[in-house]
Amino acid sequence: MKTIKVKLGKRSYNILIGQGIINNTGKIISKLNIGKDAFIITNKQIKQLYGDSIAKSLKENGFNFRFELIADSEKSKSLENAHRLIKNLALFARKKKVFIIALGGGVVGDLSGFIAAIFKRGIPYIQIPTTLLAQVDSAIGGKTAVDLNEGKNLVGAFYQPKAVISDTKILNSLTMRQIRSGLAEVIKYAIIKDKKMFSYLEKNLTSLLNLKPSNIEHIVAVSSKIKAEIVEKDEKEESGLRAILNFGHTIGHAIETASNYNYYNHGEAVALGILAFQQKSSMPN
Ligand SMILES: NC(=O)c1ccc[n+]([C@@H]2O[C@H](COP(=O)([O-])OP(=O)(O)OC[C@H]3O[C@@H](n4cnc5c(N)ncnc54)[C@H](O)[C@@H]3O)[C@@H](O)[C@H]2O)c1
Ligand SMILES: [Zn+2]
Image (cartoon, rainbow, N blue to C red; front, top):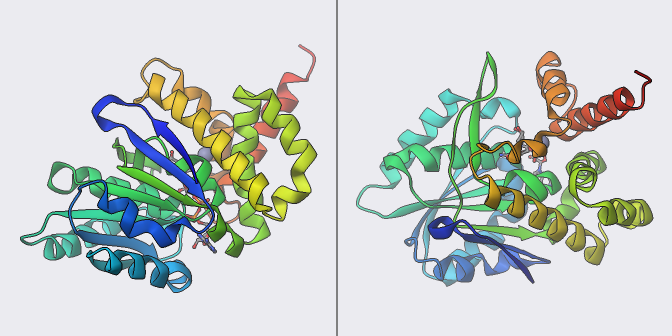
């Protein structure tokens, strides 16, 4: 298992990366001292695939928990949905010191983090990212949000998780489309920060698309480290440094909005955004 630390003083946390590590979820969380009652936000498909392993590990370590399901759609990142979950959380949280587990891709992660940030002015949460995109990007750095009809991620908070548990084995159930979508964010990191990783991606593309454990662990770790370092220097996007992570996103977000989040997924939209930038920069003045 690889460990990458996000160093943010009192808000520091570890990103744990490895094959099969969701089976240690209970043990990992026990060490954090954040209570014994977990409100697990996920969707039906992910619960079916990984709910039992997580439940088993939590039970073995003396946790009480409840699964809360959201619809499998970007549209779940809404204030209405947050409100519904918060009401259920309030019932679950009576006389308990609760924490949230975000078990899913970026949609689950962004929504769960937002709820954790505002419920009782902030309760602890753990990210268990299940897509490549979430492992390399959205689960790290504490950007939480929901969308409005007026725009994406318009309501949110910077709120860091207590740990990120990135089990690279659970990426095996992703579709090729989702893997490619996650790779778009990895390519983004390579372009903005790491020439060596760009060559690595070119050389190992086939193994990466086949999710060869050593290759996939490597790119999740390198990407996590790049994101951690940028977040450490500019946690709340104040100095302008963190904005580099939005490379390809201006056009990407416009594409997502214009297609009503239906046609292109986030990674594909970002890939198109990067492409548009590359074409623009190679055009003569
Ligand atoms: N907070 C941030 O810093 C940040 C960064 C990048 C993206 N985002 C947000 O992340 C979201 C996109 O995230 P995403 O690409 O992970 O999409 P997603 O959460 O919609 O997941 C994609 C699909 O994969 C399925 N899935 C998830 N894990 C699976 C698994 N292990 N096996 C099989 N299927 C699985 C989901 O059910 C869903 O259908 C967007 O809302 C975007 O705005 C946030
Ligand atoms: Zn992105």
